Length: 392
Image (tube, rainbow, N blue to C red; front, side):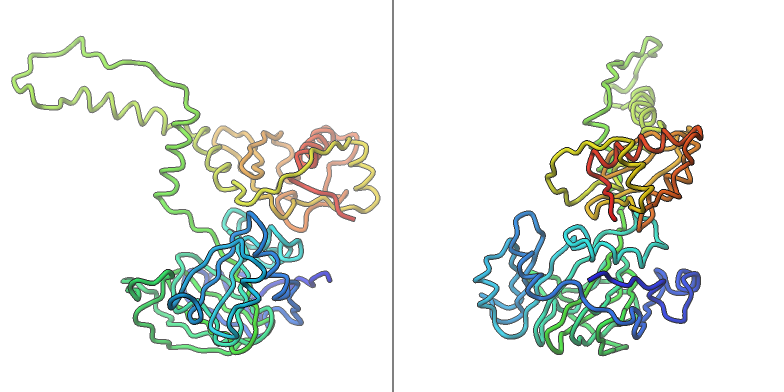
């Protein structure tokens, strides 16, 4: 069943008002944010997926495990899931937008955010009294109820000093006091900025979709770029020299010359804007979940024919796409950690490629134009490398 994607999740509030008044500022609850929502994933679907290799699944047992709040990691054995108690546990599966095409389409509802700002859609299933405990996240999250009923409690003041119940497998807040509460059903949505304490408990068998945003840390940017430099930078074998050295009266002192030499060794690399900008695009689009696929071969003529007959070309659910115009002026398309240089004249076309639900034949430069062939060549690469797909 194809989902009917709403234009927004914010009811009577415009997207512009949401960004100005709520985004990263305060929680927002919207009743019936997704009218008529029917979960494309059932509890049995989620259990089955959590048993697959290379799927990031977790099982949290508040009760009924070997000890309180036991955390188990997938892949799970089907028999293990069938023997779970009737309450007080939760099954969570990450990256469901990359594992299930219809779940992937749900990201269209948050397309007012940059692609790189979105992390994944996690789906959780819990029977009565199931949950993961009161906790905080360091990122924005849209919590959409998929099926059943859940009670959400929050404290609308961001947590500064996090105190946790000690010696648990999972991070559960030691002191949680709610100041707002809702019982939610299918289609209801709760938006939470970072570090807002929240506590959800299933009132019956229920599924919840967590659309999580990505918030890179300074530490992650720094270590990632330094790792990139170590693995790719060509070695500069310039050695320190000090032919103008003066008499040193204090042999133990580290002098200004070696400090400046060391500082220049770093700044010469860090000042290369093109290298940093290209790495950042590759880093922000690096795919977390890659399926092994067979290499494809499609011709330019087949692409033109498919688009002329109504097919749509779109990024596969496992692909991350973004683009940037570097400081140098070069236009670059980033796809799952790969950078592709593109003619500047194709910027509007590349921007359309990065939007969901993809492009149709009307988005391609007209045949005979100077950019048509370059656009089709780009599409052929994206299709043959299995980053994009054609869909009727």
